[in-house]
Amino acid sequence: MDDARITALALRARDGDRAAAGEFVAVTQQQVWRLLVHLADASVAEELAQETYERALGSLRRYRGDAPARSWLLSIARRVAADHLRRRARRPVSPATLAEDDRPLGHVSGADPAESVAVRHALAALDPDRREAFVLTQLLGLRYDEAASVAGCPIGTIRSRVARARADLVAALGEHPPSAERPHRSG
Amino acid sequence: MRPVDDQHGMEWDRCDRCREAMSAALDGEAAKDAAAEQAAVDAHLAGCPDCRAWQQDAAHVTAITRRARTGLATGGPDLVARVVDHAPGPRARWRGTAARAGLAAVGVAQATIGLVSLLGAVTHAHAMTDPLMVLGAGIAHATHESAAWNLALGVAFLAGALWSRHLAGLLPALGAFIAVLAVVSGLDLVAGRVDPARVATHLLLVAGFVLGLAVVRTVPRPGPGPTPGARWWRRDERGAPDGHAPAVADRWERESDVA
Image (cartoon, rainbow over all chains, first blue to last red; front, side, top):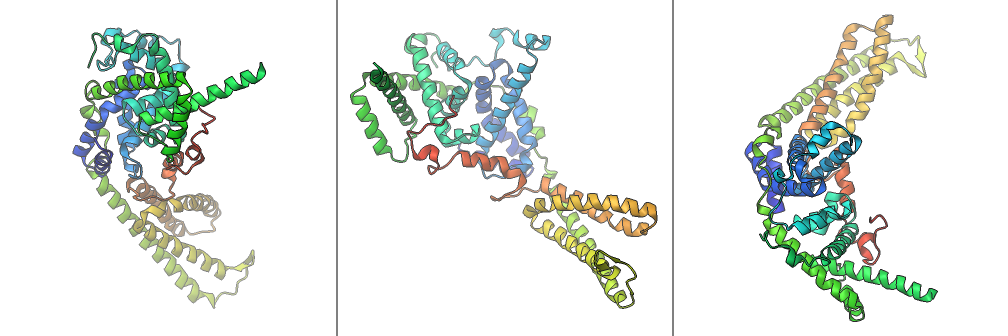
């Protein structure tokens, strides 16, 4: 899972090694999907993850290896999510959108057993920029400089957004002590 | 009562900064002068019970989200089979090599044309009487000039095939050259001012341009360097400084664009 290995896989995939391409997808897909669950929503995360890889692998030939491949990939996922949200905002009343959003919640593949319901709700309620910084650094485990490279902002902005996201979560979860909110979903 | 309000404002601001520092410390992301920052945090915590409580709550929230991170190995679809066909195929490298070889061949042909017309122009020069002077150049000189250009473009193609990293810089100039040449060649052909065979040699330039585009698109350009495709990464790298940029140099100074 380390960055050097992921980057090496991406470079081999770029030079036409399909096995390396498959391994590159295999070792990164959970993080990509996880990020998309939080940046967009769980019902479309799978579709967006597929779009992310189609874009990334399609433009792999222009990847030069001077940024870690994981950050490169996650920044593509971020753009895919932004494009999706923009598309959805443009046609808020179309029947297709309603059908998409009407998927039964029980079938949503993004119901991650590792997160308590309370934490998930608190995360979803965060300001989008703060949520992005928080998910990148806390749930995906990126360093602040890596998160800054993915989000395309200065490192100090990540630091500040993470702190504000934390403060929002403390405020949100403080009313219901989080330890008491995890009865059936410990993981 | 205004001094109290000001005091309140400053107090709130100081708490905010203290909490930002504690948050970074929880992630092991201390600033460069970690000791000074820790001292400032400790001094503030000593007199601020709210921030002491916040520190505990934040650590608790962090522990919960860390537990969520360890669950990362589960969940999510397996996309490998669905997307792997979008990766460059085994022929990707071969295609790049073929494009470079083609470009080199075009370069040799173009340089030969330039050389031949230069020699032809030189041997004919003494016989010419230059009845027409256009913008200070007689036919002999105009021919020399175009021969020099043709030779130079041949050399540029060869060099581009060799050092493909620099090729992208040639393409805008070459594209402009081809566009103008296409228009004036068309006009000259219609007016009967040029031999179709002569115009046909310009097709080599078009071939060189197309092959150059193919090389730029297929051959990876390793190493840092100002190339058109590298622009957005360079911007991101500037956005993630290693501690020398103002955003981090003064850790108390927050970004104004923070939501």
